[in-house]
Image (cartoon, rainbow, N blue to C red; front, side, top):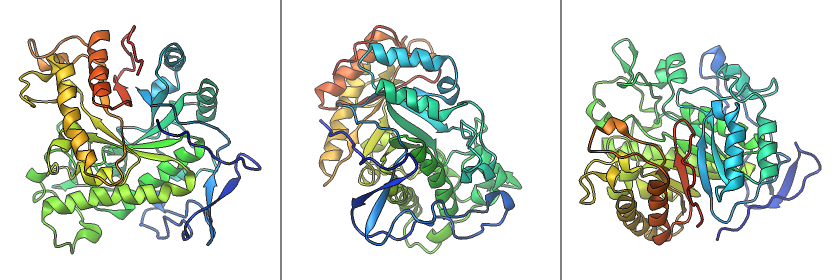
Length: 402
């Protein structure tokens, strides 16, 4: 059982508390002007730390880590709309106890409008989905719902279109995948800092965990790495082969973000493709399961049965959720056992129907299919999980009891 996170009381909601720790330099993430007016970065906090003590920012909200996180995904629209009350009621009535809430979404938008004092106002990427983030978090505090902020990192159409030089260019325009989505460049420090700034804002709001998603290069990047135009940043002089160079950049971002978030007392988690645990590394996208795991508090593999091609000897994985999760858990447990300080495992499970797979390849997912996935995890000693449904409509009647 994981111990609850506890922060010392402070004199005010905006105050900081002193905790003894190692020496840190002042936190100045953005010391240079990276060209355009809308992206003129400045220090996030002039002085977060002293030379002898680490200040942990206190949002004024208190959340304890549950016995084990059992959470659901919540879009900005749901968090700021009528569905939020329904989801709170769902958690009230079940063993679910956490919400993963979009703070920076899949398009690169903030899901709220930053207040005038926020350093994020200059980017003009806020959307009024969550009208009052503080009130939302206060409700979660009252209901003892563990708050996790989802920050989509390198899939970011908004930033790519504003800053093509921070993205991947094909011809004279920003490259986009078949779904019309653009990515920004994981090799660039400027992109890292931009996302860390957003993560810090979420931590200041009161979120107790930052979950980074799309921490990777675009799928199939190995097939277009020599065609697209992009900067290698500080990796330009790297002697590593292209695969390892991508792996190093992605891993370095995770380690960097975790270090920069230390003064805010939050957990750091990363979403990762399930198949990454079954390979030395996913060559095109730059994800190495073990290296990322060494730099986070929580690793969340996306192991939705529908997302696997024939694997583990299972011809149609969507039809066998128990067996798929069971086989995956064996591989992940073995990988994590090799690490000196393994993170908490908290996989994403499927609570949606993948009809796009075509007749005979999918089934309707509901109570039984969700429970089979949870059972397989429990039998493997994995007690935490998250449920994904893009519409945030979760199956009724599920027994989530650990």
